[in-house]
Image (cartoon, rainbow, N blue to C red):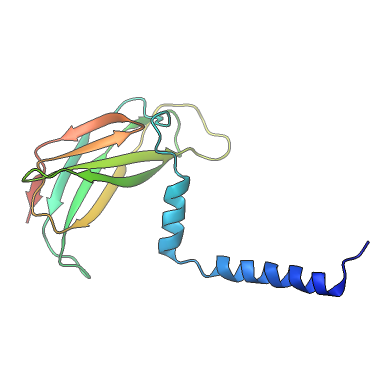
Length: 155
């Protein structure tokens, strides 16, 4: 059975409008959508060992911004190579100077990978107007991987 011409036109118009809307997403939209698909729940942390962490506030201006940048680096051990880190900013407490919580999640590699514990370097940067931090806490799946204090300041 074939569709009547009016229904065919409506179907194609709807499909065309859908494709136009999909084609108009921005990088910011894609990044927000990607964060929504990352599992930050308490059961989803593949980290085997927290590894070493450091955090510092870089106050030196960079091209395009006069704001300082909070930089966090770590090397957690993961069950296989190929995991990709995803970050989500958590709450900043109201102490002076404040503490910052940052959530970390991982996307598992796609396809076949060797099962070998792998130290995986990760890095997070955040432009910030805050002049200093008391501590930075890294949380993965509800588990605190690191509480970094003090947070050094680089000029």
